[in-house]
Length: 443
Image (cartoon, rainbow, N blue to C red; front, side, top):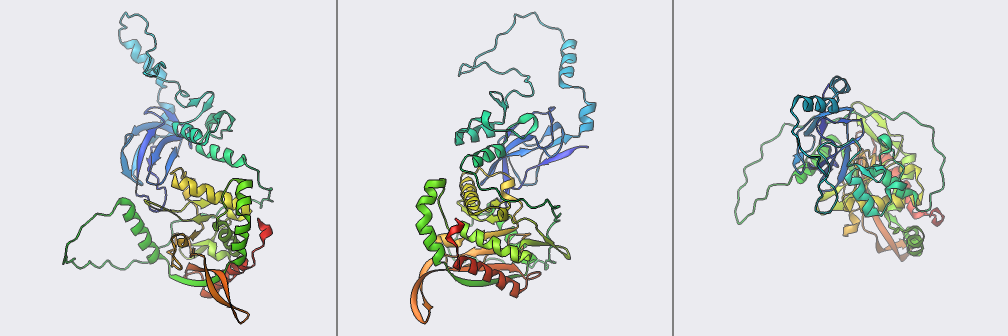
């Protein structure tokens, strides 16, 4: 049975993608999850695996062409069709036997401009995907060059030991001093989440005609901006948004970072930012109030067993939310490494599909731009998002005296359909307590 290959959506605001390179040709067999093509978007360059095993029967989008997300870019014939189809070598042999062979002298391989022999028209299944004896794609080899990684040292988890981009990133993560092992929880079946339930949308009201009274410039929305607009409106229509705001003194966090930043960077090679402090505080609060780490599925509430923390990253082209997977299993150093790695790869368009999917809770930090307070919109199908304002020293009353303290406003937008105000406030109280009583030994 034919299987369509779809242009994936690499983030909420991504509306289109460009096919950079096909890693298979029409007529070639591909295994399920074997890299099939490379794509590029405004935010992410990624290697896309095959959704099924079979023969690549049709390529609908050529290299360097751009199409909307969810468009069909290729078609795979199922394994049954692949078994019924004669092998490519046999078909080629029969074709050659049917044609007269001209008497010509044997050809020697031609040399390209770089002096290397040009490849023949037919290549073996492994040619063009190897570096030495390591199977890899052009994207993987490029990532290896950028990271100065010897591919022969990277354990490949793909078909036939093929090295993927994820393998390189896992290899790099193991190079610094490894984190102390943590006890693993017993495996539990992952909940199946269907499409987020949507509240009945009111009938659209035609917009009144726009009257231009002065000089104007009309600029069409970009596909990304249209996608962002649709996602924001969907969230407002789906969730009953309510926002609660807490003012938090972060003296201990402020002083800990000031004392430890230089040594932390020297020892671990990463900068110590405020984000890991807020992630750790939020994770601890989520453990006490698991409804904040859930989603709505019709008349059911789906509680997520893992805390996959989305971290909003602002780019020139828009906003992307890479995800720290299993943030509840990481210690402070693990969270700090993940934050730095995801932010750096987001800004250099090296996130994978997996990096931007599966979030269960989101933290956004408008404070980096000087904003004191914002009311963030929930990232569907999640039910809560924490906004962090700018940390500023302000005059506050302590023990009936005026004191100067570093303060921050935290705003939690939550879905009032399943989270009561009292629960949201208790959640924020736990976050506030964790930050105000921060233990420097956690580092």
